Length: 514
Image (cartoon, rainbow, N blue to C red):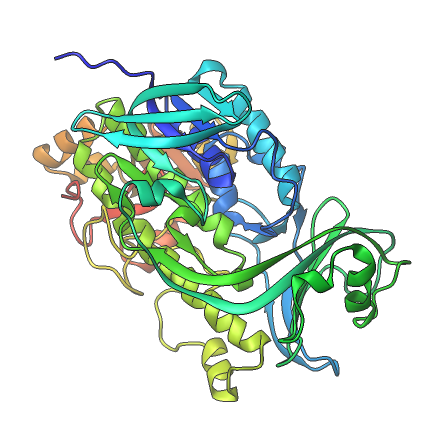
């Protein structure tokens, strides 16, 4: 039986999660249709940072260089008391994932505008309906039918897609329509977010500072493009109604030593912190991503980024399934891989929040900064450490001493004709097996190679820079990063997924994961 579809994937919501989902689907060759209730971009800066993992996703989407022009490197994080005592600091070492900074400061409206501009260049591969509120989500064994109402005219539009993604934020109507429940808590304290335009430099403006205090903890953040933000909790006897205009907000900044010589208040808004996650991220052919699936406090700077990572993970898998390159069972790996990561960053944010609110004991703070001994993997603070998968489409043991589940470093490498570029640019998209000075195909049984061939895998030998290349499918480890990394874990060969996580290694078997 032939089925008719208006698009391969329908997306509800066009914030950062929705636009990255659309970009990923289009980049990997399938059509997306998007419904966005608002006609204009949300004007307030909510997220404040992206890191090197997110920038590597942008690189895969071919937009990293244009985004980098809109954001600023972040200097460091510090936790201070009002008397000038530094409680804790996290310096950002050079990235191993392909960008020198680990973290960047952003101004979200500017970055989102650039993401949407990139999506427009895909033409009819990404169709966006602005001012369209989805009022119905119905699915069957073969697809999803979305009904949307034009918010201006009341006109009804119906679209049929193979799959759908609910990326419509914390108040997601899609989540309720498919029968998912949002579990967890919302904190009772209301925070005011004050966005300002900078008039002049002041000492240490480029630190991201958490002013730690039990009564009035403050987040003090340099944003990109000459913007700055403060986040301040209201006291129990205060309410948003006490701050109707900038005039009433100014005393909060003046109490911190900020004056009209320093900044101009652009806008302010109020919000509460959530620690919530939906019971399941999938119902049939409908998936939840971003705030529709999970809500976390802002202390780890990971809320928006976690959503964009959801979208990328789900996007390339959906594209593979739609094109017949991957079995439908691959979609079961989405929640298995993304939920643990969202839980990790939620717990990290909660812990860091306890520090800023002076709720964490000295023992708890010491535990947060303790360096484990005798590890195979060099220790980095959880906030800056390269990402690791805890489950999903993987084969072999996980943990400190295992290479499986880790993201491969991205140094500058060379190809056989002398071209020098970042690793991902030389590998291209798709599955790749890398061998330590050996053709990894020679380490496979005929059955294993046939299975990797079915996934379109490349086989690449990584040569030391002191030797000759011997064939076209080889790279040279110019920065002397890849081969030492493989040898640290005792691996001669690894299998990389399209998102550059190690799916398997010869240490635990190179067969395609089940």
